[in-house]
Image 1 (cartoon, rainbow, N blue to C red):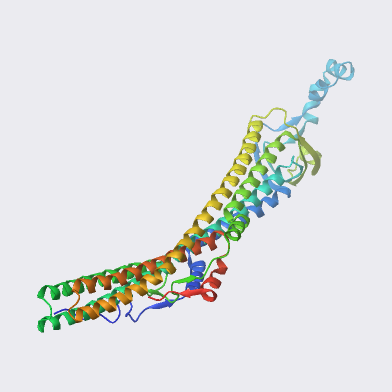
Image 2: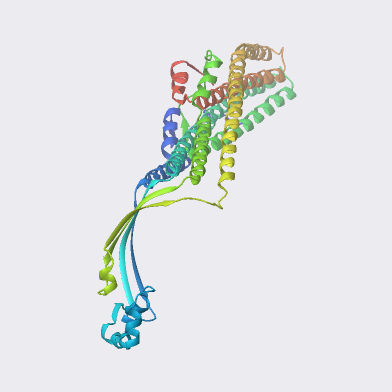
Length: 463
């Protein structure tokens, strides 16, 4: 004897379910997604590097300490002074002839430094002019920060599309399951009628067997739909990181119409993050040009030095405690290939310019394609309304005819399955419409308008 179908699926009947609206689910994704958190960390990293680039204008101050050991102390003798006298001076030769110079050495030898020397100082270098390389580095860092921010925006758009697929995928499987439950219930009722008619001798055994086989197959299809719902729920629950299976409380929906295509195209070309990423890359390439050009200019800097520690020696006492000055570095011959790097950076700017133009074309095609897919799904959903009405009326007439012996069991089963097919096809069309709409709103930067399409203008799809 065939089993009665469940009033609702085992999955739906679970008590430990967590209903969640689509907009609440989106907030959960924004808050809990590790991928979005990683992109936010990348923004923080770029901002820290941008702050670091601002410090390039500050002076560089270092404290140093040195210990040196000489092979012998540094001393100065009278004989050394006489030898260093200029030519034509008569004092040196005269003292040498008298033999006095050598005798004065032991008495008047002075030690300038000892063998062990320890010194410490503070040195400061402050760049005044670097040929624009510092500002170029800051522009490049700013471009990196902009790129990271738009990468996060792109990742958010991708996550919005993913959530739409997972969330409304569960809603679709719920409707498919409900359709299978209804088919199973209808075929069970048909099977029960067939048994009674066979017992009364109004139909042949084969008719009853056909009704039973159709019912058993419908029960199998309902079980498959239950498993499909469980799988879809697992994916959504993992995405939202919920402790209990997530159940969508926002149903599939359609709209009467869509705004004009031009509005979506213009919004996409004006605000798509991918285009701004290319603009940020162009800014970085332009900054690289300025940085390489800066290598042709001299560097001007201020410098200063202050002695912190002095040895108790004659050399230390005669040396100044501090010194300041201006320095200039003029590049005469550079082996870094600066001219080639300038040309390479210019080629990068040209590359990004062409990539942006191509991206605009590709985006226009994507938006138009998605828009037409949404319209096609909407037309399919609306166009099947008459088919559903016809299928329901056909089933009613077939059941009446079967009960009167004027129709076969196969006719009733076919009519029941045709209704299920039309209902499933309409639900699939509504699902494709919502997915296409989500992609349109994502690429055009209008994710926040989803609520308007769903709550205020949406027509809920009934299972």
